[in-house]
Image (tube, rainbow, N blue to C red; front, side, top):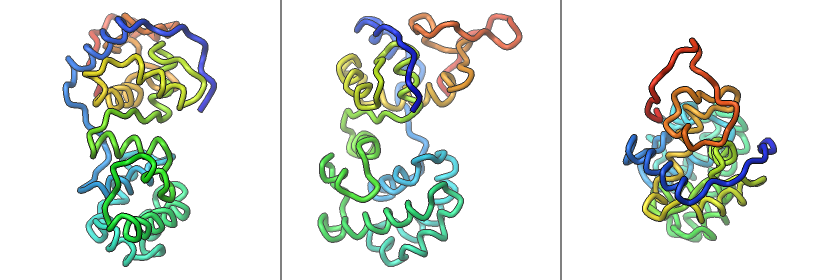
Amino acid sequence: MAAPRKVKQLSRATAEAIFNRFHEIEPEPKGELDYVNAFTLLVAVVLSAQATDVGVNKATKRLFELAPTPAAMVALGEEGITEHIRTIGLYRGKAKNVFALSQLLLEKHGGDVPSEREALEALPGVGRKTANVVLNIFFKQPTIAVDTHLFRVSNRTGLAPAPTPLAVEQKLLKIVPERFMLHAHHWLILHGRYICKARTPECWRCPIREWCLYEPKTPFPNKSPKKALPLA
């Protein structure tokens, strides 16, 4: 992740206003990875590193039909997994991790995906970000997974300016109002994916531009006013 531009942190009141606006636009934001249970969600998130959700969904459609459980994934074998995910970046290493984590789930967790961070992070290919996604989406825990989109938005806007993903996560946990914690992760990621883009943020249609500290704001392409649009 690129080093962020220095910006001051927004106040708690401003953070409240921002998440109120996100909630007004989309009260129940959803992740874009396809899954059928905790195990397939875990696998999808592991595969999504340096890959798009769309690409992962295409690759896992047949994979999850054949192997929706750790036992079925182990039976498919590392080479079998590889054949289904060849279109995803770093597919060989990811196939190795998916096979290994499936074995470990069978050996240590009875085939179930654990709901504890420490146990999740002990699985091959699972780091803090992946664990946070699974804990948030499937187990409904108020965690925040800092990916490149969320890191960018947090620094650009001033919500949680910090030099590392962990530092951003820790700041967000302090400034996000408790009632918005469960969905904060998705609101910020979707905002970064579709509006606050890396190269050219679409400030002209941003629903939180009045509070954002990013400058200079990008104008509407045709230089004419445009009403702010939803997150996606």
